[in-house]
Image: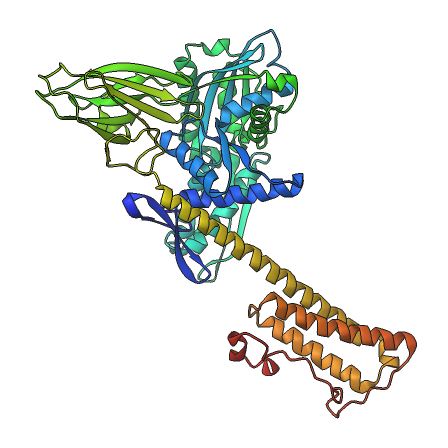
Length: 582
């Protein structure tokens, strides 16, 4: 976070907020809102290409995303005006793309396929059993904080230290310098995938000082070797969790931009005893391709092969309840195929206990406090009885999106409650539990509604800004075309000099006015463009049919007419400038 070019602050309920400057004002955004802006843009791109309205979407997430992150992704889709039909794990989507591209999925020869997905910010490994129209995820592992950004940051820190040694200046507290340096570091990383050395050059990086350096592929690998080895350790954990020996894995598929790094490929190939790695599918497009296939299946479209495709995914983390002693009683172990439902019976721990607090955790640690708290709720009004006599039937259900639903029942009183546990307050419930407390992280319906409204406002602002820019550009284009026309020899010989002088002065004044870059309404730009077009039309007519008599004043303006006005139309902002003197 220290290297990010923006600030992250604590928001309401300890939820992180991204602090940015928007139209001269400081604005706070939730991560879901930023994600929604990207989804909105993708929605617009798809609508423009397909020439129809898009309402539904399949959204992919890293396989190791937890329950809160998956729900936040669904919220982002909602803010963007999308109905998220399915949250799909990225390695699974890539496996779908590979399976259909190679016809492995329809083959009677079943294969163990390992998807190695190393992206910009996350790393996932999934082991799948593919064949006979079925893709079954056997195990998944990963790290949501390991990816290309980390490799960039290692190189960035290397050059920050080099700059400090060369110039005795520390640029680590200068966001602009860091941003510029990180950009060239990412470019260098890409180049080093195909070259053994590259150079970096940034003009005026800091306090007027230029930065020039170089880095070899060997040095880049040395800076990141420990991270590359973590990738291999996670691969090992994945196939061991699945109970499959590495020699029984038939295909290793590379996905994600960072999978192109030669050292990563070398370590992976060595781990699998020299097995060739599959590079037949586009590492940047495979996930989107697989998601599109899933969308076609869910909407009843596509070929028979797509419609008959069966996907069996797994939950990446264990889920359970905190019990006496502060340990987590696991209800659903990690790598359990989903959708799934598991039941268990729990009892009271105190005589005549009036209520029971259920704390839901996900993670692999024994102590609950070392795991991730998804949420907690109270079940009150239970049958009073001595310790351990009152029993509770508890059920955990994970749906096809990987979202957890918790059911609780106290048989003696007949009280039955259920809740969709989506990480805190504002969760979508089927039947509200009497009291819910201490929800972490989830946005309330009112907050999501506000985000939807603000997203629409920002889109309107963007649309309005785009229209203004296009109108201004069109006006500027008309001005320069008129200037060229005024200087044209054919026009010069046939148009009265007074009118030419008038037009030349008008267009120069217009261009100077445009250089102030003072934002105006679209109709102001269009009105001024109309004036210029009328002048252009008059000049063209005169040059084609001969001079037409125009009575002009000494300054070149038409008698009885009006010289174009460039400073007093509509906006108060315009009055702050003297356009004639600019």
